[in-house]
Length: 396
Length: 227
Image (cartoon, rainbow over all chains, first blue to last red; front, side, top):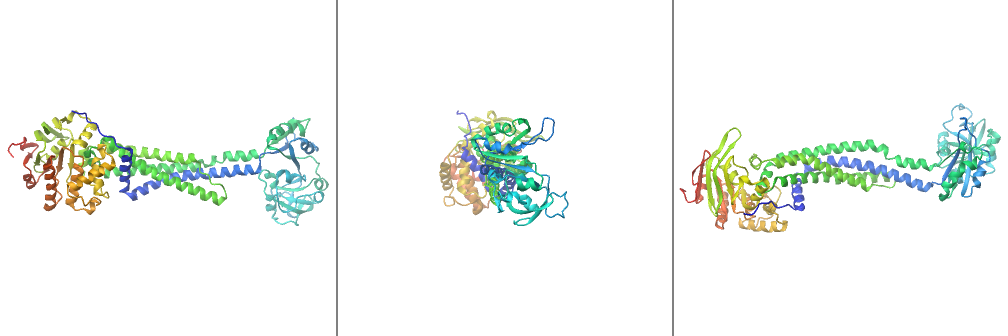
C-alpha cells in the first residue's frame, strides 16, 4: 500500500486562500489595516521629512561652498584675550591660493534706534568695523541700498545685517541710527548670510569711520578668507603662522560650513520622539490585527472544520491564517507607506524643500509590517490549527 | 475489498460518555448504505470514525485499507483529501464565492493546479445537474441546489467513499429527493456512498441499512445481512 503524504499547496494558492478570507470581511479588514497604516505613515513621514530637511541643508551647503575659513583671536598663554595683528588681513591675502580675504573688528559701541533708547539695550546687535572686501569674500548680497565704499567707509554711514535691520525696524535706506554717541546714516541692508550669522546681527561701519568716530584700534577680531576648494586644507594649515608668526597658538581658525554639515548630520536626532510615537501606533495596529485574527478564527470554526475534512493538514490551516494576517498587515503597510510618502512630498513642497523618502524607510516599513503580521497571526493561526475537525464542525 | 472496516470500535468522550460500545462494521466498495438511528444513538460519532475526523478510544478503523490509528495527522489529512468526500447537513459553502470556485476548493489540498481544479469543478457541477449555475453564489441558489454544489465539491476529487451527514436535513422533500437522486447516480457510477440519517424514509431508499442505537449496531453490520 502506498504511503500517504499530503500534497503541497502552491504559494499562489496560499495567497488566494488568504485573500479570500479577507475579501469576505471588507469593513473589518479596512479598520484593522488602518491601525497599521497610521503607524507606518507616521514613521515614513517622520523619516521622509527629516531626510528632506537634511537634503535641503546639503544643497544649501553645496550652494554656499565649503571653502570659507575664518580666523579669530584665541587666548594668550596666560588666559588673556589675544589680538590679531593689524597687518593680518594683508598677510592672509598674500597666501597664494587665497582669492579674497576681509576683516571685521568688533566695537564697544552699541547701535540704537535713537539716542533716547537706553545705552544698555543692544538688541543683540554688535557694531563692527568692516573691510570693503567683506561682501565679496562672503559672497553676500545687498538687499537694499549699497555696500560700503571708499567714500562711505570714511563717514558715519552704516550697513545693517538682515537681523539687525529687522530688530531696529529699518527696511529702507536713508534713515539714521544712533551708534556710540552720534547719528549714522543707513546706506544699505544686507541679505541673510547663512555662513556668517554673526554678520546678520551686526551693524557695519567702515574701518576708517570706526577709527575716527568709535575709537577702533585697528585690530581685526575676525578675518574671513576664501580660497580654491582644493587648497582649503593647505590654507588652513598655514593660516595661524601667517596671521601671527610669533604666536600662532593664539589664533583660532574655523570653517563655518562645518556647522551646517553638523546640523545636517544631527537633523535626524530630534525625530526620535516622533518615531517612537509611530512605533506605538504600529504596535496598537498590530494588536488590532491580532484581535481581528482571533475573532476571525472563532467565527470560522466551521470553515476550518470543512477544510480539515477536505484534507487540509494542521500546517495548511496554520499557513492559511498566517497568510491572512500577513496580507492584512501588508495591506496596511503599503497604504501607510503611500500616505507617509504623500505627507512628506506635501510638507517638503510647502517648505520649498526637495522631497526625499529614503528607500530604506520604505523597506523598513514593509519589513516591520510583515513582522507584525507574522507575530499577530501566530497565536490565532496556532489556535486554528489545533482545533480538532469534529469540534470545529460541531460548532452551531 | 472493503472500503470501510471497523473492528470492535469504542469511543468514550470525557465524562465517561460512551458514544460507541464495540462496533463492528464493513462497507464494501460500490455499496450504497444508510446509517440510521435516532439522535444520540452514536451515528454522528460513527461518521467521525469512518471519516477519520476523530480517532476511536479502542478498536481498529480501516479506511481504504489504511489502519487509521497508525497514521499521523498529516497522513490522515492526505487520506481524507484522496479517499473521502464529505457532505454536511449545513452545506458549508463559502458565502460570496461562486459555485465553480466553491467546488474547485474541494481539490485545493490535492496538489492540483487552479485551471485543472476549475475544469474538474465544472465537470462535477455538470454531474449534479448544475452545469448552468457555475457563476452563481450560494445566496443565489436554492437549498437543494446548494446541497448539490456541496455534493459536487465532495466528489470533485473522485473519492472512492462519499459520506453524507443528514444531507436532506435542511431541505424540503422535493429538494431532498433531488439530492438523493444525485447520490444515487454517484453510487451507480461506482462511488461508495454512506448516508447518515435519522429519517427512516431516507434510510429505506438505500439498499442496505445499518441501524444504530445506544452506540451499538442493531442490524446491517455486514453486507447482505438482515437489511
